Image (cartoon, rainbow, N blue to C red; front, side, top):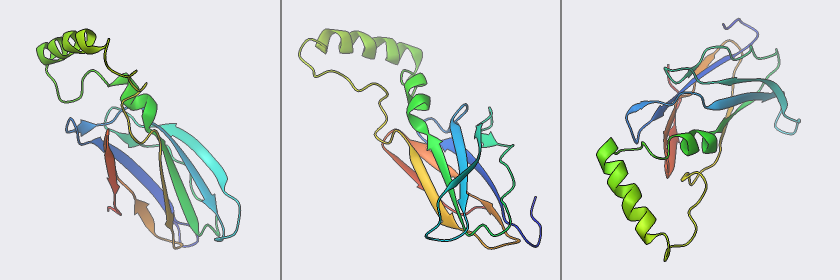
Length: 146
């Protein structure tokens, strides 16, 4: 909810590798009141089944910069066997991986190149900022939505 003296923030995440919302991603919201000020964590949340954080706290008056931190590693770790594959494809791939495991280097824990995503942006009092995150295991994109 925005007022004339504060800005407000909302976000959601779409996992573009499967074309679905990314549920259960931990998100923290931090703010500061100047470029040289320290960050203050205002709250933590997690995305719901629709990929949205519906309970981010209000920004304090005087906020000039906001940071959203998305903990993507745990999300990709919990979804590492389902990205872009049917169950049969995943079973065949698992069998091939087991056969090739002897010669291959140890796999990474999560399969995510970006274990976390931090988005920092400037805000103006009275404005609402919706900042969607488009996410896949090897890249991400953000924009100011509406």
